[in-house]
Amino acid sequence: MSGGFGLDLSDEQRELRSWVHGFAADVVRPAASDWDEREQTPWPIIQEAAKIGLYDFDALATLWADPTGLSLPLVSEELFWGDAGIGMSIMGTTLGVAGDVSAGTPEQIGEWAPQCFGDAADPKVAAFCVSEPSAGSDVSAMRVRARHDPVTDEWILSGQKAWITNGGIAAVHVVVASVDPELGSRGQAAFVVPPGTPGLSASRKIRKLGLRASHTADVFLDDVRVPGRCLLGGRERLAAARSGRRASGQAALATFEVTRPIVGAQAIGIARAAYEYALAYAREREQFGRPIISNQAIAFALADMRMEIDAARLLIWRAA
Ligand SMILES: Cc1cc2nc3c(=O)[nH]c(=O)nc-3n(C[C@H](O)[C@H](O)[C@H](O)COP(=O)(O)OP(=O)(O)OC[C@H]3O[C@@H](n4cnc5c(N)ncnc54)[C@H](O)[C@@H]3O)c2cc1C
Image (cartoon, rainbow, N blue to C red):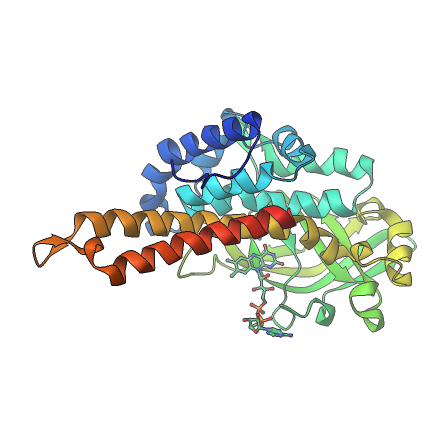
C-alpha cells in the first residue's frame, strides 16, 4: 500500500489504517462500479461495514476519542480510496451524528446517535441538513424557520433544504433552522427530526457526475412538529449562540469545525486512488516502443501529483 508516504503514525493507527484498507480493497472496490452505475445506496456494503464493527456509534466514538485527531482522517482516506460514492454512503451518517454530538446534551447524544446507525441486522443512515437553494457557502442566508409552539412545547420547522446527503432515506435528520432570522447564523439552532415524523419529505435522488452511489436529495419541511427536547443543546445553547459568545456555539459551524478535516481526508483518498491508477497506466501503456512513463513530461506530472497529495495530507492532519 502506498498510503503512508513515510509519515509517523502509532502502531495502533497503522493497524487501523491497514484494517480499513483491507475492507476498501476487498469489499468496496470490487462493488464500486456496479453501485456507481445503478446510482443506488449500497445497503449491503453498509451492512458489511456494520458487521465488522466499522459502522456503529461505538466505533465512531472510539475514532473520535483519538487525542491525535488522526483516526477519522485515516479511516476516511482509506474508504474513499476504495470508492467515493460508497465511502460517502458509509461516512455520510457521520455528519448527522456530528450535528448531534457537537450541539446536543449527553442525553440527546445517547438517545439519537445510536439511532443514526441502526444495527448490523437493520442498518440506518443519518442526514445533516444545512444547505438551501439560496444558502450554500452563505449559511447566514438560511430561510428554513423554526417556530416554538408554547402550548404543546413543540418546534415547528418549515422550508426547503438542498443537496442533502441521505435526505429522505435517513432515520434521523438533523436540521439547522433559523429561530431569529435577524441574527443571521447566531439565531440558528439544530433540531433532531426523529424517524417517521410527519411533514418531512424529499425529492427524488439527484443525479450527479460523481459520488453516484451516495444518496443526495432536497428535503421539504412542511410544518414539521418535533418535541421541545429535539432542540439540540436546549434553550441554554440557543441563548449562548444568540449572544455570539463563541463561534462554535453556532449550530452549523460547530459541526463543520469537527468534520471539515474529515472531508479533506476523503478528497485525499480520491486523489490517491486517481494517482495510483494513473501511475499504473503510465507504466503499462507503451508508445514509440517504451512505457509512456519514461517520457519526462509524464513522469514529472506524476511526481507533482504525489508531492501535492502528500502536502495536502500533512495540512489535513495538522488541521485534524
Ligand atoms: C454531493 C454533495 C453532497 C452534499 N451534502 C450535503 C449535506 O449532507 N448537507 C448539507 O447541508 N449540504 C450538503 N451539500 C451542499 C454543500 O454543502 C454546498 O454545495 C456547499 O455549501 C457550497 O454551496 P453551493 O453549492 O451553493 O455553492 P456557492 O455557495 O453558490 O458557491 C459557488 C462558488 O463560489 C465560491 N464562493 C462563494 N462565496 C465565496 C466567497 N465569499 N469568496 C470566494 N469564493 C466564494 C465557492 O467557493 C464556490 O466555488 C452537498 C453538496 C454536494 C455536491
